[in-house]
Length: 273
Image (cartoon, rainbow, N blue to C red; front, side, top):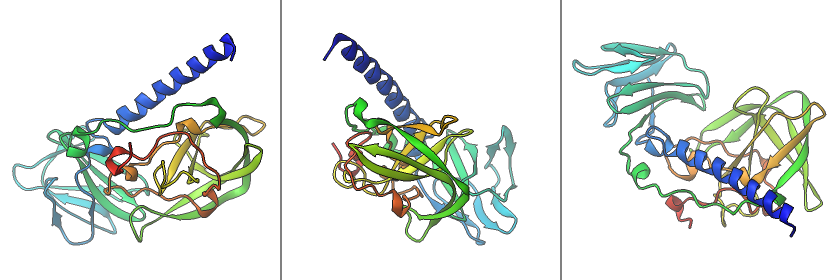
């Protein structure tokens, strides 16, 4: 190994470590996913929950909360009392209402309205000691090709919650090779203009990585379709840590028949080490 190679590896490792620390910080933020204390499914009957104020219900006009005297929420910077209507929420969208030191997430997942309180003193958050991960290795950063579909394909996938389904508009697929083996992944829209996201499993799933799913965010492809898949940055979804998540499962074609020994491993909360 040359001095230049050692320097490049050190820089690669340092960049990965910065990314990993940022991922952990978002996860364990005071109102991050580790702070969730309940997953409450709404229907047309008013319900009260031990970790949120008010009585909640939903219907054709969306989510409504009725707060008792002395109860209040802060929604979009405005204090609300009595009855408050959140309206019809978009799929995978939501509102975060502040209650004391907690945040009450009001969202729609798989066509169902939910209330998911997040409390900073949640035991899962306060006991969190970090996520195990493979050491970063440049061999797992591969260049592939993005192949857009003629039109986005509605793709239905399962969820961590039994009986729930998610529907994504898949814009295309990503083709790449690992150790000379051609592979491909159906891609879903990512977070940010032009960005993509792939959900997948591989031969490490259920062994050293979380069994149900892994996620990889991708930067927008270049004009010629070139795209980089850095599997060192494969992450766990929230369901890897808590049963109070509604995470999507990968489409069947994204179950890779190879072992990708990169990225985050099974969380300690699920028996990982």
